[in-house]
Length: 179
Image (tube, rainbow, N blue to C red; front, side, top):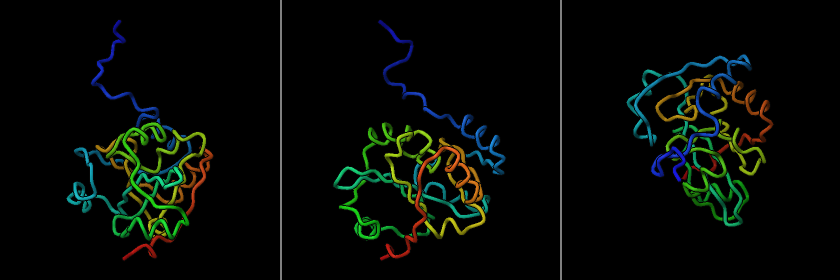
């Protein structure tokens, strides 16, 4: 029996970029969309920064020893040390979550992780940590569910989105985690 989808094809995103962008528009959120080649790492996107004003962000999907899940969204400039971050957050040893767990918890693939993915975490199982330095910026740049696009958005608009979907978050000064 054939399902119509090849086994090698990745599953469809629970929340595709167009749906997210339409939700932001419906909320009256101003944003700017940049389309570019897929970006999988912070280093991959360095050459794009000059054309995108604002703070550029990175996202870490982490899990602690007690199996608690975290999504850390920080400015690229914020140096993160997992041991010091564990101490700062008051949790057991942090490590990177698996690609499978990332998909199960946030409905996203590696390389496209972003703060909007918590829309797929309807049970608030992933603790969203937002870098205070990043949240003080005028504009933050994050992927809208697709690493071939970047959205420039005001931090207050991200908060509007998070409040709308009912996902909890914490704004944390991550600078103490600098070496």
